[in-house]
Image 1 (spheres, rainbow, N blue to C red):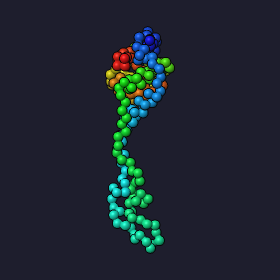
Image 2: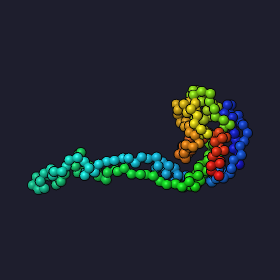
Image 3: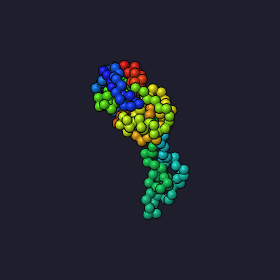
Length: 206
């Protein structure tokens, strides 16, 4: 299988790169992708929410009034959930939201996502991705050559110039290949990668 290469400097054709069909020509497995994306989002949750039950709220040890004869409803504590300042019924407790996904399933999901991006022509392969400065204007001019407005840029390693230039551009995310996530891949209109990134992914996914 071949992917077209575009020159970053002038958006002209720059030849083609051969890639493995196992990594970039797989069927779209929506249930698997949904499972992996759900697990990824769940694992990012802290699960530290905490509310107090009636037994944890300070006070309320004394019965507010006698059981009978007052004309009022029975009450055993001013910290009951139906009282203002009382505890919370079914209070939230710290817990883990972690979901396990094995490596084989995760890699299969990434292969399926990359294959679908290639089929929909949403995957842009550049010969290089180098900026001479951290100026946002310089990056925007380059992106406009490729008609890129909502995109994920994946680099081989962290590029400080690129990170600084992209942080003020709306709907633009920059990450390196080691930090790339399935949520980022499916969350943008375009995914921009260099030939070096393509080769790294091909090696990891095959």
